Image (cartoon, rainbow, N blue to C red; front, side, top):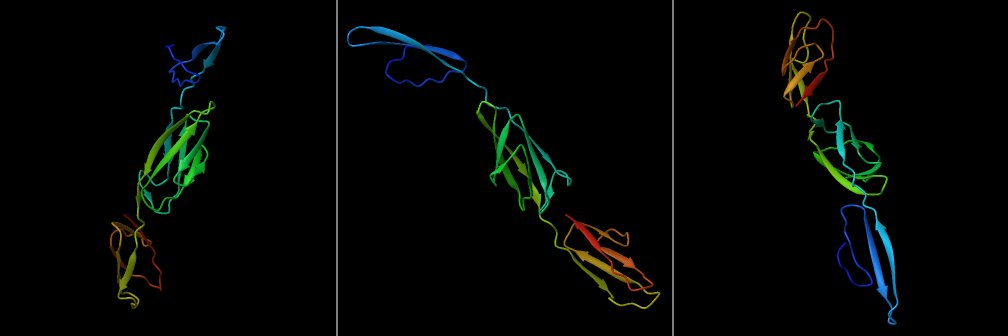
Amino acid sequence: PGNLTGASVTVSPLANTNYTVSGTSTAGCVNGSTVSVAVNAVPSLTVNVFSFSGSYLCSGTTATLNVAGASSATWNPGNLTGLSVAVTPMSTTIYTVTGANASGCLSQATTTLNVSPTPTLNAGSSPTAICIGNCSTLTATGASSYTWSSGSTGSTALVCPSVTTVYSLVGAT
């Protein structure tokens, strides 16, 4: 296809194509040859993210990135190899995967992992020591929702223990 001249030409066919070349010597002798160029499709990549924490990750949480449509893959940042890789980003990160098919053709896809910072919780009680039959108010700051080991939810909890008790707190943003 096309009328190309020269000892070397560059072609970019969109489908399998046969090229015929003919040459003439200075003595006028003519000879020809045919070369076939096979065009292989690039992989169509699909990226999936698996995480137990929903659409947002907390910093330090691990997510698994999977790519379909390739026979091998490299993920960046991190230069991780494999169709499935585990990542633990500390901040929002855009991952780019370069996938290759069996023909060696390459394609890229990206996915963004949105990362929320882990809350820094502060907990206290007032008063810190009570007599049997009295109560203390537990207070928390640093998150948007709280769950106390006593079963209470919210930034404050009223507790009236009959023995010395240690309370734990879970906070979420």
